[in-house]
Length: 500
Ligand code: 6LW
Image (cartoon, rainbow, N blue to C red; front, side):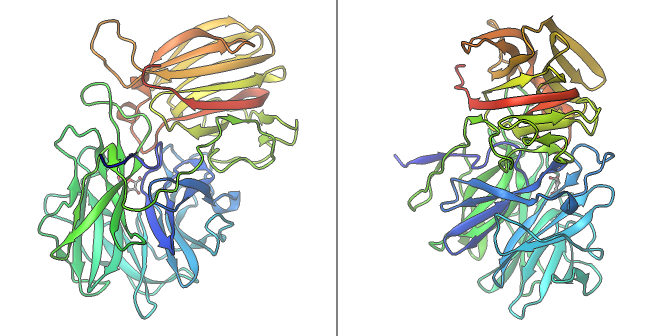
């Protein structure tokens, strides 16, 4: 029985993957939308096990995400390439004062350069490719293309439409141009990033075409199926060290009925690719995927407990739109993360929040929070209009919910102490004897000093799903300050078995 690995290889909200290889090292970048820092960068030695090594846009000056930047706006799809000894990352900041930008570095863990603005590059999903004479070709959704000076960001000609995708496709986007053998291949996503998503490809004699569509397009889609991985698309290709070819792509894992609800956002999956008559054939894409034919290099999982004992937060911690130190700092009380409310609640765009992507279908998070100087809590967030939270302060612990225009208080009890351990457990749907409907149940409670869990409220996970909220993101679980100052001693996150 061949050994298998679990797809997605990068679970949780990690969409629009772009990949490159340097020697025996693989690097991958994803979108990050309204979260800061932006564009998580991952490293792997086997395409299966990945470690986040940083974020390309981790300085406020690199990533303006002002209040007014809508949820699911901000950083859209990146392209990550290595050329001439440097890493290049091009992406789009869909925000007031944003636009297409390019950053470069010799160390993908950072620091990356200040953004090089690309005023002549239109649209979204920019791609970079260099031909043999060093010309840099920038291709964008649509699909249009222009030549670019990557050192200055100057467009060297006007954008030209080079392909519109397949006749029954729509929204041709996510272009990636690869020179493979005698051909230039132009791979795109089309059909929109929902259930109709697909990957199509064309090839031509030059980076500018003309392009001949693959006779078997789309080369990958799960539309019209009940496959457990849906919305498959937005792919990139990489040649492995052994010469084989692989595809990373985004997909979702809807659960709990029809149409099914996905809550972790669009995740990064891995599939094998073979070539037949000069066209790619995408192999099996499964939740349990046969491992590639080389030694695997497992990596340590993220620590279950974050003690906030260092002034630099680990790269997987994200805030909403910005994280000026004065609002989220470990300097004010060593060993604690101090969250100073900016005045906004989770309904506002500038709430003080630090969290991590939910990466497991079932999981538990706990925080020890000192609310002697204000109010704060533990939240499961999709956006300003879709979040559940347990909030403590001013002598009361409450479980609150917002779904669109509906707000509810699901529980309220006296707060036992200023320092309180709040918890959320995301568990399978509780349906005594009935059909499983919905992806999960989100249970909030208080923890005793002995680690015991006292449930306060159980909420339906359907309403914190992308099918309900819309947009491009997935759940983020984090601590926040609603007023005054809340201090976080530690934050625990651990996966739960499905039988939890
Ligand atoms: C991404 C584009 C898309 O830039 O969604 O639906 C955008 N397609 O390819 C955000 O993921």
